[in-house]
Amino acid sequence: MDYNKNIWGGSLVKLSLNYLGYLRLKHVLRDLENIKGKVLEVGCGGGGFIGGVGVHRKDLELFGIDINKKAIKSGSNQFKKIKFLAASIYKLPFKNNFFDAVIVEDVLEHLEQPEKAVSEISRVLKKGGVLTSYIPLEGVWYGLHFWFELLGWKYKEKFAGHIQKYKLNELFKMYKKGNFRVEKYDFGPHLLGQIIDVGTYTYAGLMGNYEPGLEANIKNPFFILFKNIITVITNLESILFAKIPGAGVYLKCVKK
Image (cartoon, rainbow, N blue to C red; front, side):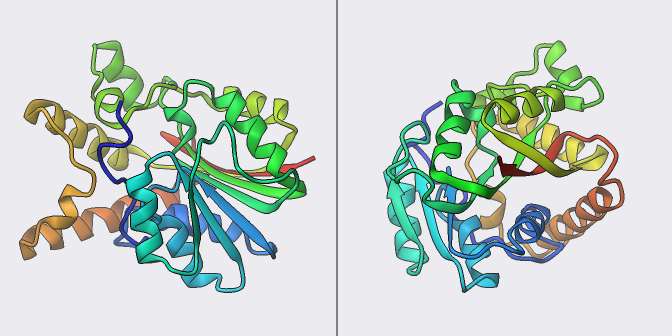
């Protein structure tokens, strides 16, 4: 997949139930509650997520890296107080023990060498520093993606670049190898969220294309109302069933 073709994650994520990124931002802010100093988001795209963190944590010194130079330029123009750099997650341009926390949202499933990335994140993170992340669990038998892919459904891989199909125990082993201790975790999305995700990428497959953030450009008030209602219900579903295994996991880890 060509990650330089489109700018992903350019819209500011807000702490509101009608935003798809609401729970991710909520969990990250919770994980960073006691953090002071420097925080890095790897794979930041256009900076919408780290920008959302900055709205609520003006005391932090925020950084974002991504391989997409267009995304980095867009983020730099939109979020002036955040330091953006074009760089690879496999070779972060920072000294050892530089950051107090690192954010990894929806990134590891895209990587051919995720263990190498986790090792590099560990290198730049201080001892006792926090790694907060969200990772889809698309290799678990209780998820819709698992069963659809058994039938040959590959649209999430084709249009979103999800080449890793994780199970929870695999993530635990990878983080342990990277010198991290898992401190807490919650799950999401659940049934409705999975149906929407599978449906979205199936539609993209039928149309032959997927453009990031396409739904945000649709101005029809009825569509906006419908989208907001569904998003609120999806978020509430994941809040209610946070401790029940779902199609993704919010992980807070601490470097040993």
